[in-house]
Image 1 (tube, one colour):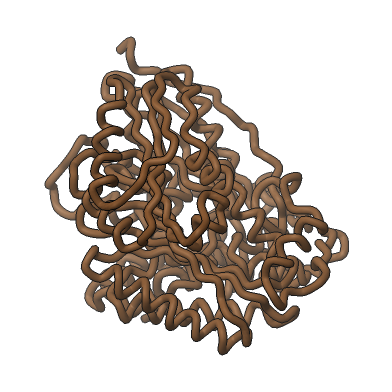
Image 2: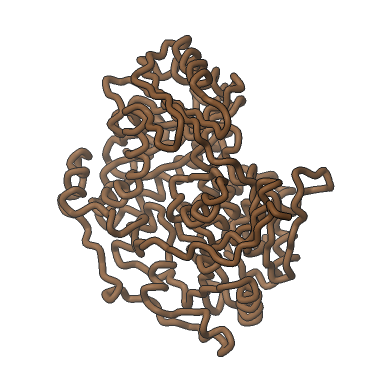
Length: 542
């Protein structure tokens, strides 16, 4: 078929990646900027924690030796081991800064094709080696860190060498893509065909398709296709028990979905190697505007009306007064709603006007605004200020970590009727936990990342001064309080960050016990040696 293309090449360009913190090491904040940030947090440390060199690290000795037939796929290099020890949560960054890499994997594997994955898993299962699937390491929930003590060794399996778009079906608007494809490389391969996956998480440049699938990641867009689940047509997964490949269909009612078993399984049941993904035409019409509210409850009501209107904005970010001020978008106790619409086929000016009118009906005051056609369209100044702050936030978090400032973020979702009480409870109860852990008042901000007709997805940020050497214990106490508060108010333990190991206590309480039994049974059937990402989601033995 002329509209179906098989591709034998792809983008192998991997960005430079910090071994200790977020993203591009060249974008890390210098010492002086770290100090300037910390000056805004009373009680913060006066000097930035130095970044240790890899040569100075004391890594645990390597306990494994790969078979000769697999030796070309694995590395015991200290830089590879250090870079694959942790994800990018606050506690990961702090431990790396303190040179604590006791959890370093023994070896790092870099498979280039599916056969390599099969061979590596066969060796690991026969040798009692734990295997930690690794996309690009952007997990903020302990998803790529081995914490058990029961295996003879640990292998981190890095899928970044499998990053090609293998096939494009233009008629059905879908593509078969290897799981190790980084966001920018994936989009670069789709762009010549006028297509896009349209999935842009904050970690876009430093995360992979397989990671998105394994964690049920949420993208940038606030309504409709919010999660990678919505864009998934079929999966190919290597498990120790065999290869699972589902049938690509637009929809099916044939029993429980095999894809749903592996979506969100976080590397515990198998390693995703390929997926057929649903694509979209690239948008050419875009428009954005911002609306300011004097009262946060009125802003919440406006967003609920928008979410239930059927207008489906691409962007619908509500920033509470603290978040608006921290991002430099607005001050004076005002909240800001950032709206955006886009289309590949139709002008969107009218839709944006309807959205702004809804916000105005609830007491909002539009500021600026822009409507334009073409990819060069630029939103209003508030939207651009938010976007810049959004992309810079992980680097700011790392800078604060170097100053021993506790920075915790947690996201959730709840129904609209429960949100006001949840918002108050987070400020009250998590604020109390911060005072108990640090002796200081916390800055607690909130924004909506996604909105649904039946509820929002609030994303909370907690900032407080910490004590050098005690940052991890303080963070753990605050995290525990946050998880307890979410559970008490029937909000999910995570909306798009995944469960990993850090959210396990909350997830254990949230999921139904019969479902936990089914998960353990699936684990026993697919991974009888219990080598895949032990400790994530559930304990294999019960």
